[in-house]
Figure 1 (spheres, one colour):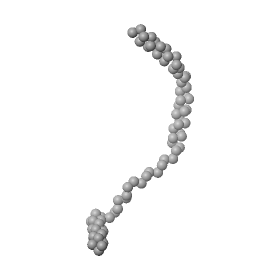
Figure 2 (cartoon, rainbow, N blue to C red; figure 1 turned 90 degrees about the vertical axis):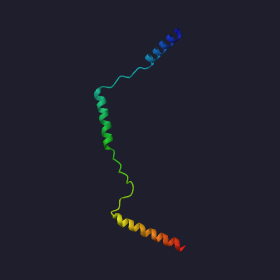
Figure 3 (cartoon, rainbow, N blue to C red; figure 1 turned 120 degrees about the horizontal axis):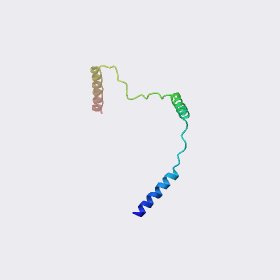
Figure 4 (cartoon, rainbow, N blue to C red; figure 1 turned 90 degrees about the horizontal axis):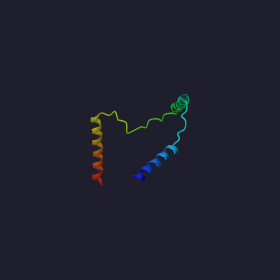
Length: 82
């Protein structure tokens, strides 16, 4: 038990002596620094949005089905010709 108490006092002494915190800046300096950061952030250009996926066509669904069937017919006829 005495070794635990000695260890605790040594750790406490180490922590209190080695952690000297620097003085905090005045509130005006902090607000000025924050203001500078926000102005830099707002001045950066925003990237253009990426184009995702394909655009939906304006073709009617029945017309699209007919075009797909025509493609299938030509594909089948080419296969039979081989």
